[in-house]
Length: 374
Image 1 (cartoon, one colour):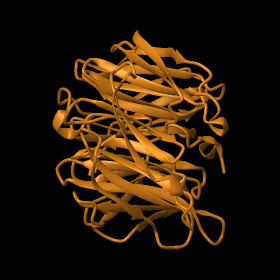
Image 2: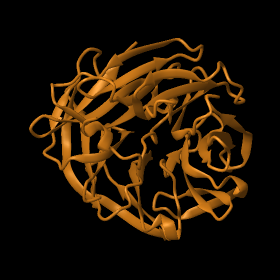
Image 3: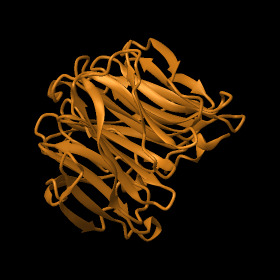
């Protein structure tokens, strides 16, 4: 099943600006995917964020070192600014990033999850990825999307699981708690926590591992971190456990998409998605996106959703992207590649454009920025 399936389900992307907060309107031309040779170690996972002047990309490699690259617009073209910057070392593999003002904030998780001794280090970086400040918070057990920025208040929030409660933290750029709310879900023993910007403030997801089969829970929070809608249950109804759910909010359609994968009777992996309205009412039943597919990641163009995923049913393995509308219409295409082996990938939106960012092993590591145009 190729190197694509060696990408771990640790950090997840999706901590960037909402469409109404697009930085400067620069977008990639449709049909052209710029490529950069980055000379990096093979990445296990990748996160990408929009910055005021371009993009920042972060990867974790096999020794669990967190590194970063930045790219800005120069004369209308995307150009490299900072290459292979060391951000953090010896992390668990869970990491995330968000932009807040002029800071790019990266959270990296350290420690042993079995002993619930995880802690998070928050790095505030400038546009060249130089460190402005950092702070380590002990005991913060975070999920696959450790931090998110609210498009309404420019505030960060993070998640942790505290012996029966999901704790939601309002954060300063250095990781300092500004406010905390808890949700008592102890009977569910939640796992795979995720948080992203939403129309109300934030959307959070988690897996209820005590349900049989395991199901995804989805809730909307306001800027004070109070629950506004939900939790609701997201499930395919096939009787198999949900795995690695991710969520995204689309500004123009004011809808939410959740994507996940699960095993089937043959022991293979099926990837599903479902869309919910502004009050978390489902727009349609869970839809099968692709068989033999794993590790979904989400972006939006403001109206529809783009689901990137690893397609190991193809030969050779490849990264595919499905465009899913709020009404359930779906089209699928493959990433533009140079004939090498797909590695880690991320989804990001900037100035109303969804972009697939992915690494390819072509005798060296290349990073592509593939604009997703309808």
